[in-house]
Length: 191
Ligand SMILES: [Zn+2]
Picture (cartoon, rainbow, N blue to C red):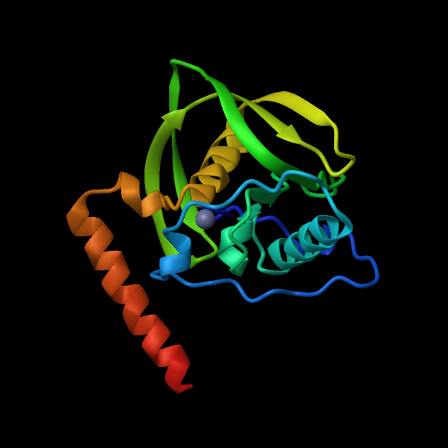
């Protein structure tokens, strides 16, 4: 996810050897519409993919990235919604995440997406969610997310189900942005 206007600075990116930037798929792309497969066991390859995704996300810059956005149809996402200047980054890796509880209260947030650059729109979602996932150490984790973290984790889990934030907009608005993205992709292909 790309936060509306308030973006995470690139300066806090924790770098380590062996990380590789991965190209981010641009909407529309059939790979952004398919349901991703469970990861299951956390292997070294899964950890390497998570490292690459974190570097790609920080570099973009974004606050969340799901594996299908880099062309990997697996249920894995990374995020870091720490925005305060000078605050320590909190890179999170969620393997096979699942929303197990949603607050009845909702929040409206302006969302953007690294796969749909330069387009932002307000989306209403549950304000808080409890998510269960497998961490890189292979252990189960559960956490209640609020604020931007809650919005971001829901946006990224949507990607694992082939859903993008445009799906919450009116068909007219969705078509308008999709046409602009098709034009952008044609221009980039020619460049
Ligand atoms: Zn996105």
